[in-house]
Image 1 (spheres, rainbow, N blue to C red):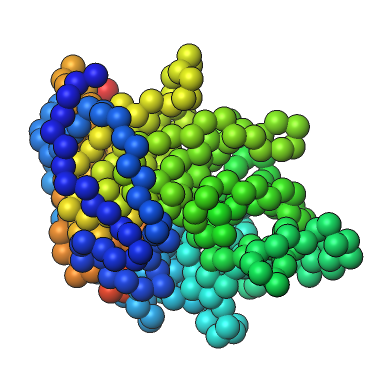
Image 2 (cartoon, rainbow, N blue to C red; image 1 turned 90 degrees about the vertical axis):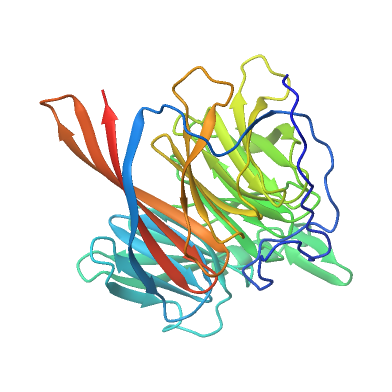
Length: 406
């Protein structure tokens, strides 16, 4: 393994930060201790290498805001952009960026801050700071969203509440049903088998049946708050925590078992992303690094940390991987695009674009491709639209013109 020069450690202890990451209720849960276990990996920074995708030009083409500040999550579904800010979700037309619906605040003012959004057909799932998950039904004809259910459902709570064995101790003199989260629900993920996963600052993750909204299982996954979750197409689950660890889980006989614990980050892990095949995992944390993990068939640790991507000057707050492009947002107020080099170089990944312009930390990023096939010359030209949301309530749309040779 190649040696590399160590960078100063960026710790997030006791909620005190050494960067400009604003303290508010949208911040990821930070550990009260720091994870110092670290093995050297290959390090990559900003440079220029050959890539199958050639970015010809890029620019910010639009900026707009929601009615409430502090963007906590952005997500795209069926050509609709969903932006979560405080306790409401605003839906925008992805082509015109016009607002088409706002829901949550119009129904009730008691909902907790929205932390995450997930989709299954016409259903939208939202995770909240009030320990609840809400299910919304989209009516395509009118593009309106109606509250369908709140998880756990009243039916499930009544059924489970009869037996004392269904209660767990969450603190002194206080119990809750095991189907209920006891702290902020920080992330959601949906798989292709009709299951939804929720993670929480209560250190657990839960598995839900999306057809009847019942809770199937609850797992205490970490010793500190869980900030992120991703699920691969083959059912492998990855959870990231303020304890600095990433844990790998597999479902066997309707139960999730721990397969591996990945320990490379020096502090809180805030974000995860997977490639389409599920063979490469990306993780970002308060140590200002993005680690690239690659699955090894005969590796005792299940995955090896092969690259460490450096460039951000603050905590990594969000990651998304789309069609061989990794996009990251940080408390340094910047968005970076990373690509894998096609050359046989020492650095497997490089930062090809840095977007600057946000006034506060970038809390969420999402993206969409629009391709224009040109069969005459064998080139595949297109536009990558990157949308970034900041804690100042601003959403920026960045357009990247791309050319790919076949």
